[in-house]
Image (cartoon, rainbow, N blue to C red; front, side, top):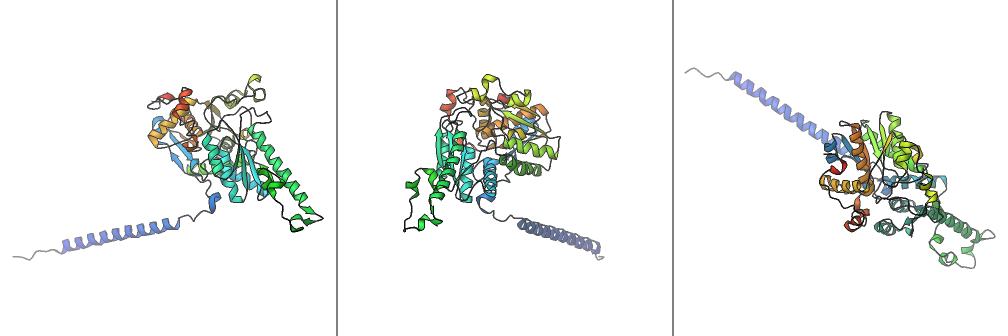
Length: 426
């Protein structure tokens, strides 16, 4: 029998093995290199709570995106250390005040707030060696004032009245800062006799509590944060939130929508995005009782009878907290808006339950209203667009009202929808 010739098969087999080994080595090297690069890209630990504010994730809200045919994205501001978008504002306000000298180290920051800004100020102030005093309307969810006090701030709960009333919570907060400054100046004056520190005289150490009773006596002056009119609010979003959205979408964004309370978020983000691309449409979503929808769409905010200066009671007829207003703030006047939509309390409640059930998102009332706005914009623009909104805070600080069945039942707001039929979207 003639010998079998196997040279070609051996060569082919050897070549195949060589190629396989080369491919295996390539992927092994690539994986190792990629892993090394990934490790090198790991960020260093952030420097304290202040450095952890901002750079929040931008997520696709799957249920709303699939229902509308648009890419609806939410900026997860509830992941800030203080639990809301207001952390950005608190940080910017305090930083600028310290830099300008309006706030002294050891001073007290005062603010009139429905809750979230107060919580953020109480979170951020200690990082700068300062304290916080908050004046809050007594119809705000009780858990908000409980959180503020747990953070070490002092809280005054007052009845809600018109902004023109001297005892509106914002006006009281402003007075508290002035009182703190007056007490600090008085203490400084009486502590010096002939250029000598009184503490060093006669071995006597004064008792601040007896000298100036009350919480204000312990602070090195006061500073009123003034979130409604302080443009540090606008700058926090123009310099932070807006650029982050632009970067996270690679500039592929068609529209932005958000509600407004102080107006800082919608103003800062809209101004930045439209400077980057005038094609980006920016919208307001407004809750019941607010005059901003009329101002944007008709140029007239309210009738003479509806003006806040002529009303002694709370002008807002909504369970959403922190959004809606019947006056123009300096921050809101910076906004670049292409239009506005209105949302209802029932839509906000239904939206919150829909997102919890379908996306696992446990959102607060203003976040839910923003998502109502995102669906409104999606319906107006049609499928194929990318729409960004703000997920301001989570539902943990809304348990006693927005998520309380008994409270909702009083106003006929119990959720009943099984899908998005409440938005007329199948």
